[in-house]
Length: 123
Image (cartoon, rainbow, N blue to C red; front, side, top):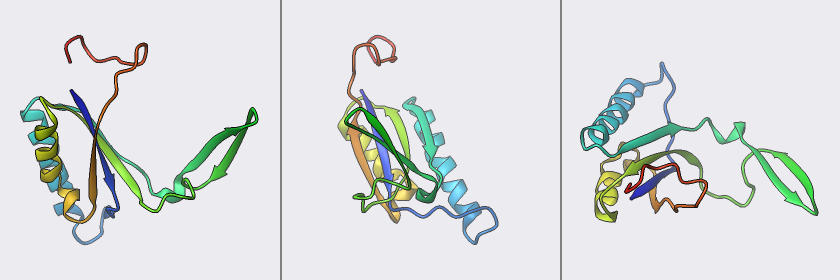
């Protein structure tokens, strides 16, 4: 079953910042461990929330707003999609994720939707 690990409230150092190389090595080690286990599907950091644009539709009209969803108090910094055998494995990997040491990792099953689900049969 696929699980999404949503990474919240974790500051990402930029190249040249103190700790950048160590943070990059930790993230790469985590991704390598997920690949070694055969569960890695995808992983992507997000640019800062100041780059976000929010779209909603009301009364048939698109409303486009600069910035993140205004009622959100947590900063979404990125996500991994992992194809784990069960929730226990997904939670184990979330605890291994280096961003869990300073932020929060939300683990949520990916819902299969007919027509949108591109996973191989049996996955």
